[in-house]
Image (cartoon, rainbow, N blue to C red; front, side):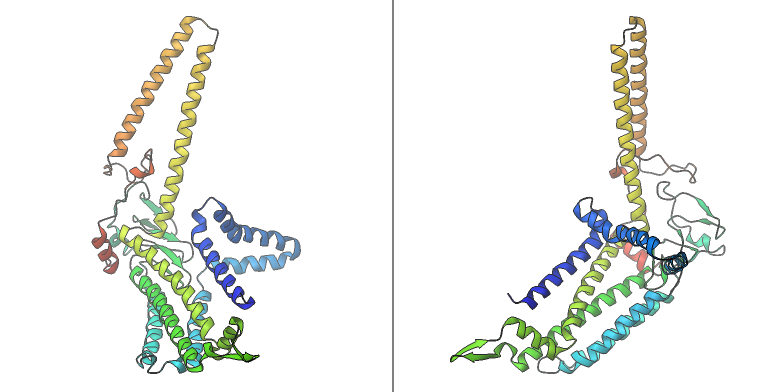
Length: 407
């Protein structure tokens, strides 16, 4: 196998592995999880330690200020990056790919179709960036009180910054410094929060960008096919000792790169981005169907972890109780003392069993009681007993996102 072809295959494998680690590594506890930590937090901590030894203090402060501005303040940096990627990609497309889109190989409809696809994607980008996600104020906070407090994920709280009672499913965005109704997440690519009022526009923006990249990949493939067919690339070769020898694969790929210029790398870039964005869109559509938000997935993860911790603590307590009971039995005391300890142990076991039965009855009863909605309910013994109180069914959940209530 030629060296260039090996390099291309290795490049694709490494790129796919990196994307896989970044997407799924956070939920893995094995080798992939360790690699994900090394590529994210580990790399960040290493850079910080290295900078603390090399860079002067004023440079570290400047870098910290820049990082704080980039991650924790509203800014147009990633918006500008997105526009540069789209516009520069469109420039390369019309310079190198567009000339090969002609009949009989490709329908002439793709010429105006490509322009319409780019304009529509930029339009969804502007709409998602400019739309109101559902910012809450004293005037409209009552209109956002249409979700009940489940007292597991959400309880009645007061936001000191906005000076309002936070509705259920709302969250105060640290970047925008405002409360958002049915907060999903803050998206730096649109420099805007994604909430109840603009989730539909955000999903349309992600879908349109993914489809644009898929469409670009398809047109790049068509252009490469036109180049191969018109130039007869696979028919190129030479004669040695009267015998016809085809060109090696590396020379064919080099020639194809030379003739296509930016068509091949642009197609590969569009393919990788389209797959990533389409997965991201499908994940958010799954959340919509389940009537969950990105913020709530993290909350459910915290509840699951806390339930596991509680289970371990209960097991430790029961084990400790058994050890104490064995120690009391083996103790060389009087029979009366031993009998009293056994009776006390049985009473404690009976009391604990009664409390566990009451707890199970409460946990099996999923309906939220009419108690104080500013106090958390006790966690159930297992995570499976927690039900999503906001799930109304697939179709109603979709309608809730497509036609949100006015705030």
